[in-house]
Image (cartoon, rainbow, N blue to C red; front, side, top):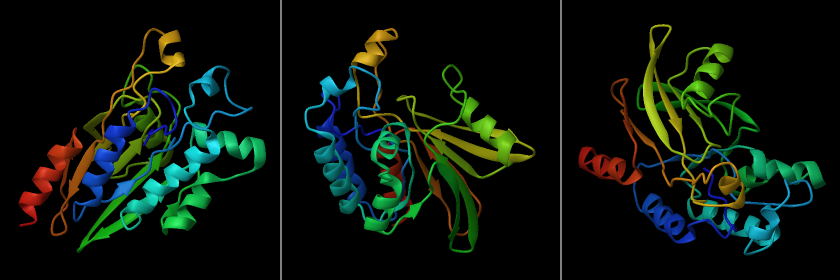
Length: 231
C-alpha cells in the first residue's frame, strides 16, 4: 500500500525492486491497502499537484501495470484517500476498475476476506484507514475491532510508517499490520514537522496445517523464511 506512483518524492526504483521480489516468490500473496498512485487533481489539497512528475492519467496506467505484473497474487483492492479523489471528481472507482482488471476482490472502502489455506481458515480485515492511529500505531486496529469484533489479521495503511504486532483481544490473538510508503518525502510531510515516509511491507506467514501466524516487519525476511519452510 501507499505506493503513491507519480510523486517526485516516491522511490519508484525500490517499488519496482519489491514488485519483482513479490512476483518471483511462490506462495506470496498481497492485500492492497490503498493509495497506489498520487492522483492530485482539482479535489485534492493544494500544493500536491506541483510534485507530480507525470499526470494522474499516466499514474493510473503505471499503477495498473504493476497490479497486472502481480495479477495472480493480489487478493483484494481497496479505495483510499488519494484514489477516492477521482471518485469525487468524475465518479471513477479505482478499486472496482483495478479489481476487475486483475481478478481480485473489490473491498470498496474496506472489508473482510475469509481465506481457507489447506484445512485452516483465516479471517483478514483490510482498509486504507480507520479513525485514530496518528500517535498509537494500533489505534486504528482496536477501533475496528471494537466495531466489528475479533478477526485474525487487520491490515491498514495511510500513515506511511510500517508497523506489525500482535495483541490479545477477547481471548484471541490478533495480528495488526500497517503498511509503510514508497513516498519518502513530500510538501505536506515537511509542513507538519519534516515528517518522512518509511518504506515497508509488513508480511505474515500462514500455515496450512495448523492455525499459526508469524509476523515479519520486513518483506525480504518473510521471503527468506517462506523459501526455507516450503523446501
